[in-house]
Length: 375
Image 1 (tube, rainbow, N blue to C red):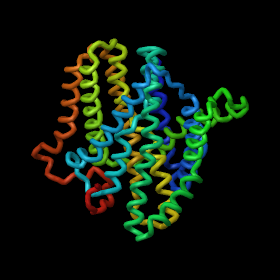
Image 2: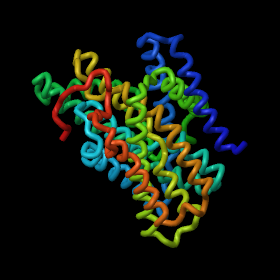
Image 3: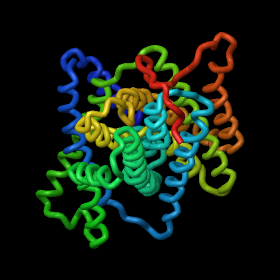
Image 4: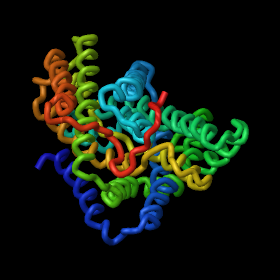
């Protein structure tokens, strides 16, 4: 069996095991315990390692900026175009999908296939491009999440901006993920790398990092609660996301017509990566603050977010497998543009069919909050 396909089946099997364990951990407190381990130990260790491993080469500096440009364009599309195509009256759902859809998790869904089909050189290039994606997911989306929280909190509680900023600042400083990011940036500025740390510290951090992927996948399996109607709407959203990414890749191929076939495949496959867990971590940080404040209407819908993550991984995996399986046939920019248009039209088709005579909320089915659209 292909090594990359075997890796993918392993990841999906862990999610399935988590799903089958739902009866063993039926209460929310048990899930909170798993989430605490992820957000306080495993994810901070992984982020710390990823940041300290960053080594930029001046000749390839455009790669992180290209990835960041893709993230920003997708964020703008999710924020302003998506509500027109897939309407929702639920502000929390709109914010949640605006955070998730522009994010990328190439480490889980893309890198194994790049390694198997293209090789180590292309994998190194993809890892360098991922620096821009990390900046977007770890820092920019974090700022967006805190901005939305502060805006809503001031409006709901009529609290002063100064008081809210003070409370939020204390909350953010106490979060392990944010402490780790700040520490890693300070070390990088000081000229330190991972190899400069004591061996015992390196070994401990790496061991904590190793448990991140299985823990996150188990958590997704344990938390996922997708009803039939919600599953259909998520597939539509993911199809729209994939089609939009194909359109951007097609335009990029037309802009750089002389790149090699392997680089073209990399340019096509990387944006098809599944949604990242980092935005969900930011949502959890905001959610914990809101729980302490007793807010009834949260800024983000964490249940919807975890279901989107559960759908995104297998969806992106199938798309990326298809890209590499078709090989050089995929490097034709006109074919990629046509594929993108087809996926977007396909995602909108259920709304255009005569039998589709109900209003789609594309959000939580049990309790839709009737609120004004997010600005």
